[in-house]
Amino acid sequence: MLEVNHSAEEGLSIAEAARRTGVSVHTLRYYERAGLVVTTVDRTAGGWRRYRRIDLDWILICTRLRATGMPIRTIRRYAELVAEGPGNEHERLALLEAHRVEVADRLVEVQESLELITHKIDVYRGRLAAGEADRLWAPP
Image 1 (cartoon, rainbow, N blue to C red):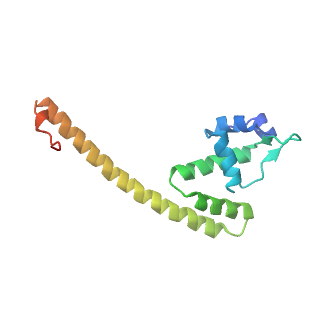
Image 2: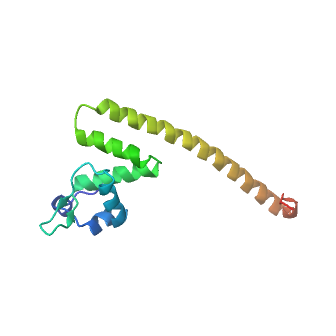
C-alpha cells in the first residue's frame, strides 16, 4: 500500500498524513469523527495526532471505497466489522461483494455512455471533414 519508512512507524503529523494519503486535513478529521478509522489515532503528550502506517493504509482503503461510490454509512459498517476483529469475515465479504456488484453495474453504464460519446465525436469529425458541420442537429 503505502511506502514503509521509519517516520511512518513513529507517527506522522496530520499535515504529513494528509500529504501522503492525498486527502485533506479536514477529511482526515472527518474520517475520525465519522467512525471510519479502525484504530484510535495516537496523540502526542501535547494532543497532536500522530498517524501510523496502519492508519495511513486504512485511510487509503476508505478513500478508494469512497471513490467507487460506497456510502459513508457502509464504510462505517465495514470499519466497525474490521475493528471488532475475527469472527465476522463472512459479513465483511458479503458487504464487499455487494459493493463490487454495484461498481460493476456502474462500469457498464459508464462504458455505454463512453460509447455514445465516441459515436458523437465520430459524427462531428466526419461532418467537419466533409464540410457539413452546418447539418449537425441543433435546437432552434
